[in-house]
Image (cartoon, rainbow, N blue to C red; front, side, top):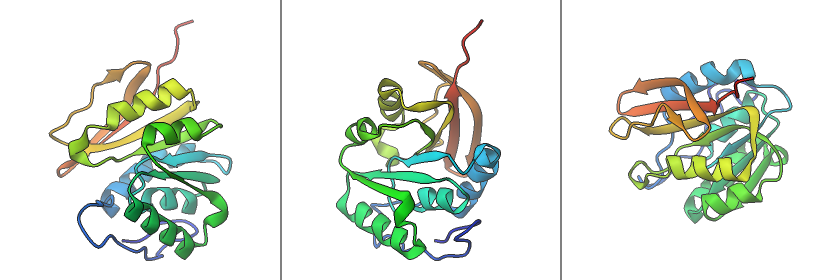
Amino acid sequence: MRIIAGEFRGRKLKSPDNYDIRPTSDKVKEAVFSIISPQITDKSVAMDLFSGSGSMGLEAISRGISRVYFSDCNKDSLRLTKENIRLCGAEDRSILLSGDFRENVRRVKEKVDFFFIDPPYADGFVLPAADAILDAGILADDGLLICEHEKFDPMPDEYRTLKTVRSRRYGRTCITIYALTKEEE
């Protein structure tokens, strides 16, 4: 597992010891960042909601995002994320949040431009995570929810005030990207 591009390009990250943590593949990571890169600025904020190893959030920092909130309830995941943050020297741009994803979303007190939502596939947490984000009101007006899910768990085209702006499949992994719907004037 490595950082693909940007400031930390080629940096090897520590991998999980078991299959409880499923890091996003390099192929999927590259596809996601090729889609969202035009929207990244040096003021962008992201949240890696089920951080696992922290690879998505660290890729985001490497590509210019100013701050990432790393959230997980698993102590092994948080330990691995913290170690990978240290390996990249990204402590000053990283905030670790321990606990339930709903609590952690409520703890963020600023608008977030990118949410990386990659929960354990069998848990069905993608839409509850979207609910928590929408209820907290912290998604930036032009922000995106980047949801990773299994191909056997399709996401709706529209959900509450979100609409799908892009959907791709990579083997058994799917990426669905949501944005806020624009109100009719």
